[in-house]
Length: 122
Image 1 (tube, rainbow, N blue to C red):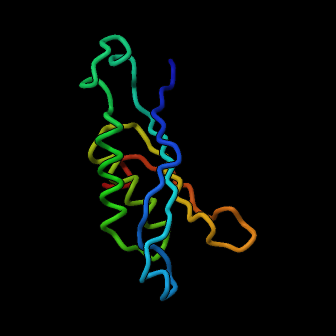
Image 2 (image 1 turned 135 degrees about the horizontal axis):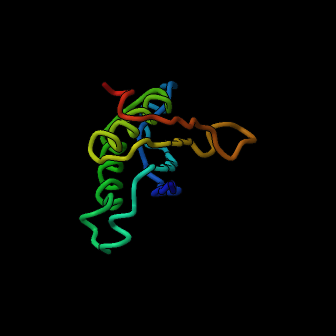
């Protein structure tokens, strides 16, 4: 049995995130990567968008959420993005990486990567 995934790579969104006072006042770059385990057999046969996860719709939801939210921790933001993926679409699991480019001196980026399934939100 094969394993199928849908990838959203290097989605760059501006949002408020961080624990410092100055971070609460400005929008920062937030880099998001998502891997969704999703059965693609039906859509690969039908060639119909209705038979798959519409990643354009998902991406718009995530962008809106990040732009409208204000979290202190990237851990929280990653969890909420996973929740959006799992509760609005039907992947068997999702892996979400959220990074803050340039947040640490001498590091290109800092962030977290989580993996969740629907049972984590019941």
